[in-house]
Length: 219
Ligand code: ZN
Image (cartoon, rainbow, N blue to C red; front, side, top):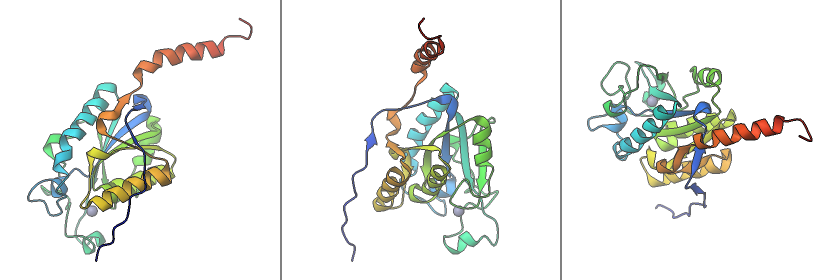
């Protein structure tokens, strides 16, 4: 019999300003197998997140933020298919990222074999050479690939922002448990996608502040 538990409170921020030069938008596994009817491992709520992820892509592309996609990628004999039904077989329709969120040519697509997009990939390498210290992570599945990527980022001291309406899970418990863990364990920021903006308007002021701090004492 299911037990009823309360989700401990975590803050959902209504305004999050990120520096586009130091932030990457990471879109996790928005592939046909997970998102579209006919996929082999569909998350029913994933399709509804497409418009929110598109808005985040517009924000990122319009402000010069880096955009990175992860693409779950498996081939014959992959042990993950002993845990889950066959999914994300390299080269199939199900493996492709959904058309609505198609990556641009200049955007990185990281093929990954496990839940964590850092595991066995070049993700950390690229983020570091780009000077990125903040990740806005969206996509699916919230408590699986989004969660383990966010956790892995947190362990590496990246700041993590999760727009909770741009992630999806198979079960509300899984979603809430994941968001609570990210907020509580990694000091991650949970927000809505509409709450996320850039702090470009602060740049000018901070340059003045910078100049003021460099002025010789007593001037
Ligand atoms: Zn997989």
